[in-house]
Length: 177
Image (cartoon, rainbow, N blue to C red; front, top):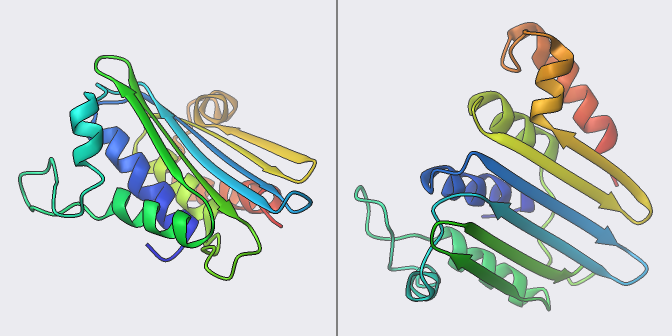
């Protein structure tokens, strides 16, 4: 995971595997306080406290196709290297919350990457999943709600070829530094 967009894709895919129908992603950057916060809230199946501890181990995975799971351990490593921390709370049957913090000007703070592309990809490829993305940069705020976008498109799917450029421009014009 080289950037924040990679972490967004990875954690959202974890939520999908946990049968979530809704994923809320929050990215806040405050240059005055020198803080960046990335958080995820899903309504998936949740985990026991024991499972929350296990997913922090890179040599553990719930997948049957491989025996390692690097997403959460890399999120933790990247956050800690940048002066932050990761907290994970979950309750079986209720979902999971993952919060990562970073010192924004730390040399080890991961770059953002293509956040707009990550949000569009999740929204357009997982049409049954509601993606809510809140982005705050200092005092400027933007919200993407895939259900609201679908409603505004009046039946045109988010993944329709003619919509990609329009939606990517909408995201890119609002998710910038």
